[in-house]
Length: 209
Image 1 (cartoon, one colour):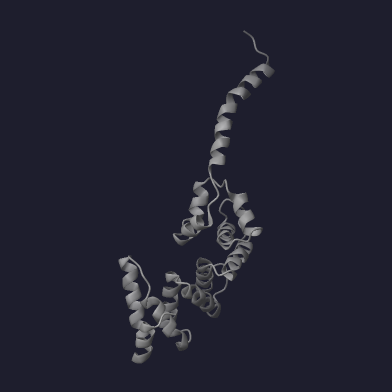
Image 2: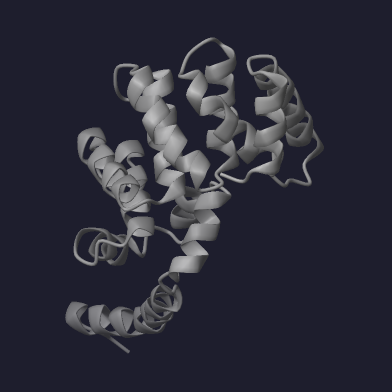
C-alpha cells in the first residue's frame, strides 16, 4: 500500500495525539498551592525546589497571586524566583521589591530574609541598622532564625541594650526539638544574660514579649 507524504504526516500526527493528550492531563494535574501549603514550604525553605519539581508549570499562577492578588506568601515566592532566576528570567531588583512587599505585609519569613540580606550584604550593601529593624520585627513574630541572628548581633556588641530583655524573653520561650538549635539558644541566652543586670534577666524570664 502506498501513502502520500501528506497521508503519512496525518497518520504520524494522529499517533502522537494520545501522548500529547496525556502530557496535557499531567500539566493540569498540578494544583496551585494553598496559602498554608506555601507557608509550610517557605518555613522549610522548600518553596523554590517545589516550583522546580512541579516543572515550572505554575509560574503564571504564582505571578498572578503575587502581582494582582498581592498575597504576601506569593510575593515572597515570586521575589525569590526572580532573585535567583528560578523558572523565569533573573531580575534581582524586582525580586527584592516583592520580598520587601511581603515584609511590609508582615510575613515573618520575608522580614527575616530581608534582615539577613542586609546583615550579610546579599544582593545589596550591608546595613546593620536596617538589618536590626527587620530582624526585630521577625523575632517578635516568633521567627527563631531571626531571634538567633539578632542575638549574635547583640552579643557582638551591636544594637541597643534596651532591646536585649525582649529578645532574651523571646529566646527563653522559644520551642524546638532540634538539639543543636536548643544548644545554640542556651548559649545565646547565656551571653545575653552577661549584658544585663540579674534583676532585668529575671524579669525577662517572667515576661513574654
